Image 1 (cartoon, rainbow, N blue to C red):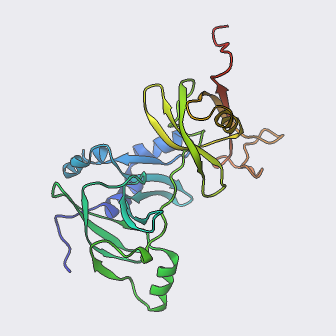
Image 2: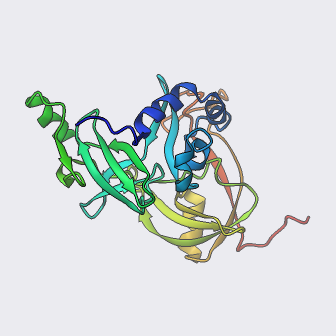
Image 3: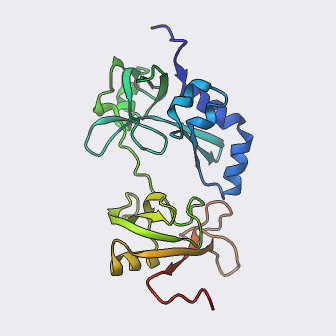
Length: 266
């Protein structure tokens, strides 16, 4: 099928973003290498048709060993075993209809927004399907509508570390839900709300925050007082396993329990 010139190819745009967005690269460097979500509104300054998507993030730009990479909004398998469309922060893409797709390493999905906007986004094909395609010497399976769930990789669980630059210091947070655990290390997660009402989902607990939510439960309040790299006896920054690393080191995050006596005015 010939390419539709009306379709905005987010996969190609993401590649360009990774190669040329020097200002965003600098922002990642300033934030200790932490990946950033890029909203449609920012890209709309160059591609106005994307303005309809507002602040929804369509790319997640991150630093890798080989440079920078932009993960694009795409199709994943959800926790209920269903195919679904997701922005780069793994929130569901509302108002879109899938049109056609191709699986495989270089796969894609074409979707149409209720406004008429048409996009080409990524597809996260699982390893079993990739191996099957390889054994058949096939580049991918093409089809219409939403891809079969059997082709897809399970969606990552978005998690926010306490050292994230997105979490401001010395303001009061309230725990509004808990009970979930991270996939990788089975660490407790909490959803918190700032004084201004901004919600941060699935924040990874350290020992201090675990104690607060276990003791006080939902409604407990805390502040992030400070953070600093974990260091060895020689003062070198190290990973959680003790390996020296200037870029991937672990963090020590100090948490203030707001249920206790406040000495900040002394």
